[in-house]
Length: 83
Image (cartoon, helix red, strand yellow):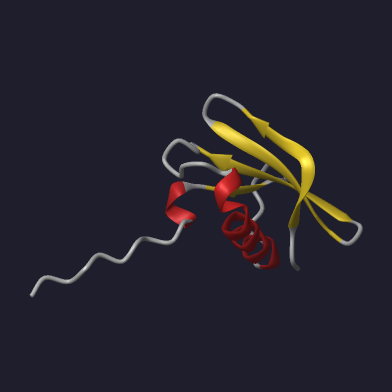
């Protein structure tokens, strides 16, 4: 499944962002939890959509029916190795 964020369906709260995504006729709510640690959600939509799609494909849906994305779901930056 390839989820895409619907335009004007992004709601920011004090500690999280809720997005409505769609794949064909299927809509899915996605919650980016503690988004202050993730940074600007809108600039990372492609990555967040990819993570949400993967989680939904693997049945990783929270008790409330939403896909939750946290800081731990985001890829870690590679650090330059010491010589």
